[in-house]
Length: 341
Ligand code: FE
Image (tube, rainbow, N blue to C red; front, side):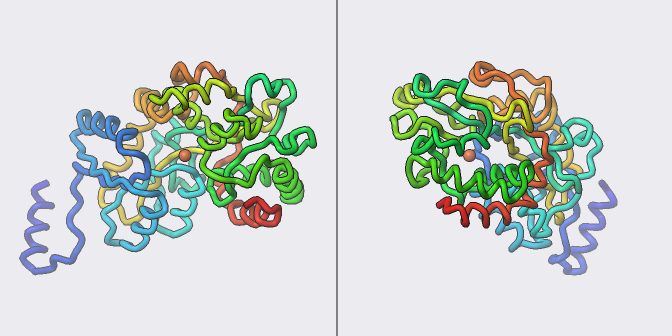
């Protein structure tokens, strides 16, 4: 500590104020695309336990990434926290991330939810199953994503636009599982069964199903969890009309994605950043974070909230999520050719 202090004084004495400030071990700068109240209590708990301050900057995912790229080696960011592996992959592709280097994280988080090159780690799991309107669809009629192209579903499926990264990642998983040609045929078949041209977000698809516009919606489960726990009676009533079906349970498993964090290459507090990631992966944090966000823990053996527990357990696709990033461009082209607006 003393030496570092003297070194800093020396630098200032030279007037070299534009040199990088010496690393302070007691803070970490987090650029976060998650709503503040869904992460802040956890960060406060981390500070309480470790004495490390977390400076939280919240913003839209793509804006935060652009900012890190623009700030270059002068970025104050140590960690980028965002949703969907497609975005974590983009950060890595921009060259602004670096290997995390934590043996504890490697041991804690299943390999499929970590970057093989160690630049990002998943911190919560999000599932994108099939949702159906009770009484209109017999769950015995459902089986796989692939089977949704059957003519019996014509005009009955609601799903958002292909411009959304969730669908791009789902499409990428389809390419990984079935090959590009089958995936393109699937996309065409799905589009042919759309109840309406894509509009709105995931929650809007669930609402449309509840309102009778379609019988099936594909959406991330945390949106349904949010509706179940909503303060608005209309949202709770809509949610009550819909049930979750876990597709592909006899095969590859249900499509999942993560929210996660990448270590910024220019980080000046990599030790503090690693400590925060390790904290976010511990039992207590995993349970809290998953419940607060209506998501699933990335690690097995952590208890689920009552809402999630009611939907039952499921087999998740074990594809390494990095593949979803690698196949994103191809997924986009396929969706475009299939006429998925
Ligand atoms: Fe979302």
